[in-house]
Image 1 (cartoon, protein in one colour):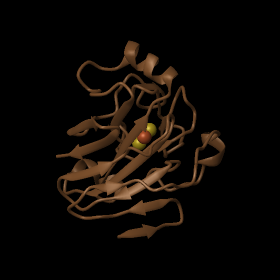
Image 2 (image 1 turned 180 degrees about the vertical axis):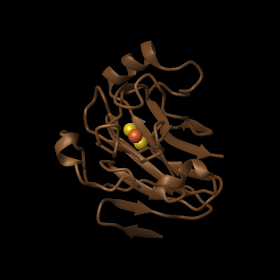
Image 3 (image 1 turned 90 degrees about the horizontal axis):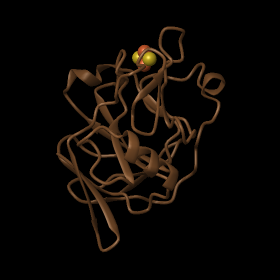
Image 4 (image 1 turned 30 degrees about the horizontal axis):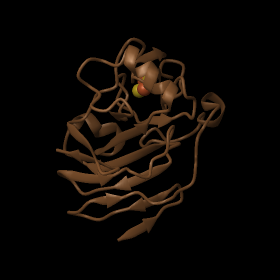
Length: 189
Ligand code: FES
């Protein structure tokens, strides 16, 4: 079953592997201007948004191109996600060659299974609001709350480089990423 939204293509196939479909590039580049009045309950700027049911999920991300991000949206009862409507948003960022090199020097030990793919929860370490995708290769993630006491920005390793979450890392979900015969699949536990 496939479903369209105003933002992106959503592929929703409960209890089976979810495949990415071609979608619209929706990168944001001037977040302070463009994000001034956006909702802080959901990400923005992703290339794909995929909804999965609560519980374990398997998503085929083979179609991601370097620099692109798919966001997986999964219902949860974890209060950590109270500010995002009890939805756990998970980014799968396929890195460019430059970002792979950056990650080799800056990734937290043990958090990246494949240097070409950075996986992180899109929940701000400050007050739990949604993290958006900026389109800036040096700082691909930023809090959707652009208020004076918020405005966190994170680099390609998920490290806070400015704003209220400076020097803090985005959290990492429990996942397994496998590459088999050219197919790239992420399994969420
Ligand atoms: S909630 Fe993200 S910077 Fe405050």
